[in-house]
Structures are given as C-alpha cells and as structure tokens.
Image 1: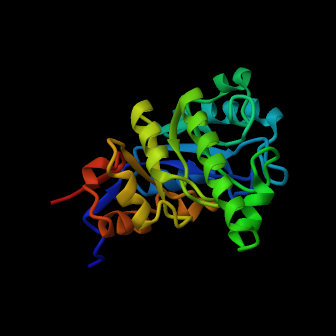
Image 2: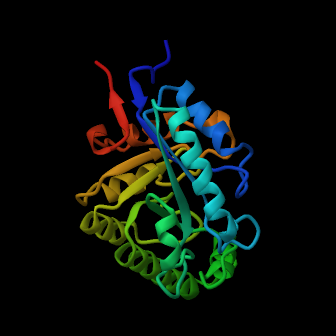
Length: 247
C-alpha cells in the first residue's frame, strides 16, 4: 500500500499545454484530470511576457473558446482558464495587462527567468554564485518588493513556487499573501516552497495549495512531493486548500 493513499488532491490549478511549453492539449489535461477523479482543473500557461515560451496574446481568445467547448463535455469537472502571469518590476507588476484579465477565470503569478524588467540577469548570475554579497542582498530586497507589490496590486488566486529562481524574503511575502487571501504554492515540479520555507510561511495566517505544475498530461494531479514537504515541515494539512485526508 502506498503511504500516500490516504491523501487526495481535489483540484489542480497549475497545468501547462502546448500554448506555452507543455506537451499536451487543453483537452489532454482535462481528460487526465477526469481520469484521476479531480473535481476541477485550471489551464494556466506561462504569461505572455516570457521571451521564449510565453502564451501568445492572440491565443487568449482561442483558449477561452476551447474551455467553453469542453465544459459541457466533462460535466464532472469544473474547468477554468487561468494564466501563470510573470512577476516583473514595472507597471502592475505582472506581464498580463489590465484589459486582458477578463479572459481568465482567475490569475496565478510567479517569478521566472526570461522576463524583461524582472532582474533576471542578476538573479541568474546570483544563483550561480557570480554576484558579490552586496549585490545579492540588493536582489533580495528588489525581488521581495516587486513580489509583494504584485500581490497587493493584482487579485492573484495564488503565488506559484515562491522562493524559486532568486532570493526572496518568504516571511514578508507570506504576510502579503495572508493580508490578501492569496494562497502560497507547494510545487511538485519545483523544489519551492522548500520544507524550511513552508515553516517560515506557516508562521503567518496564510493558506497553501499543492500543484502539479504539469508540463505533460500524465503529471496532472501529481501531489505527493508537495504533501511530503508539508508533512516534513509539520504543516497542518487542513491549511492546504486542495488536499483531503481520508481516515
């Protein structure tokens, strides 16, 4: 018997398709979610500001139409269109424009490389130990500031893999998430939130979500790695919005 058999993911709101750099179609992901007994799924391809694999803005309407086509075909599932907006240091602090937001049922957001005006070069170098100490500490402040502003200035359902690809003050970010009812993701694709980051974030009144961040349909609904880190951190699993524990 698998030690995780008593845990169940109820919905997966972070999945990618060929509209960015996933391997399957929207319907492929939906079929997998249905097969695994999920109650809901969101298609959340990478935001349009990414230089190499962001979703094309012209495809927002195409994706919306496909979501509407699929909904009556899979009545057992709630199917949502989202986007993993990229956090940047200018404008509304996301690469999704205000006039584009109505295309989506909700927004999620996270930090990635490959985004102009997001300190990406500095963070990439720092990750490889190529930035002096003062510059690295400066990045911590800048990264945290733009993330907190993105949280406060946009209605994000959750923040994806906080702490990934840069230095971030997880406690300050958790405070902002708690104040805005923004969930914090424990990813099964990335290593963040790490066990230690979960412990830090959990000191604030914040909720968590486990996500597959699936880039291929077979990974839709994956949750074990996230639950494992939550348990290691001593997190009360009732604080994870999409994990049920069977007696």
